[in-house]
Image 1 (cartoon, rainbow, N blue to C red):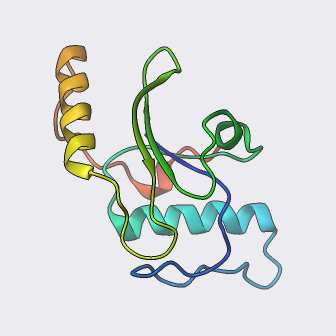
Image 2 (cartoon, rainbow, N blue to C red):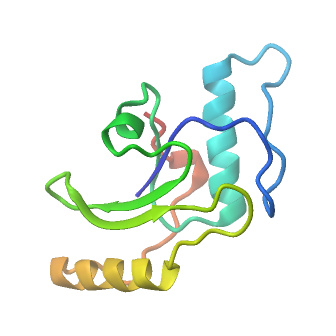
Length: 124
């Protein structure tokens, strides 16, 4: 699962510019739409949740960029650390993938889950 925290509101190198609300669109609705669009753009093969109240952001000190794998007990099972402020991420995504595959095999989870429809993504 991916948890989207608040957006920094500026472009990140290698990513499309941040989206804005459409005329008449409430800020919350725009945020949910933009997260769905980003998940679709990146072809994320897992569930995406939006941290509407900032609880996850505060609990995991996630702003501006942090990659953690949260265990079934709610604790940090793997901490990839903070990404680079400007430029490519310093995260070792190979290590993250290996950790997730090992945890999934211990739990009997398939290594390549089916991609959920963006229309069915949980948003709260």
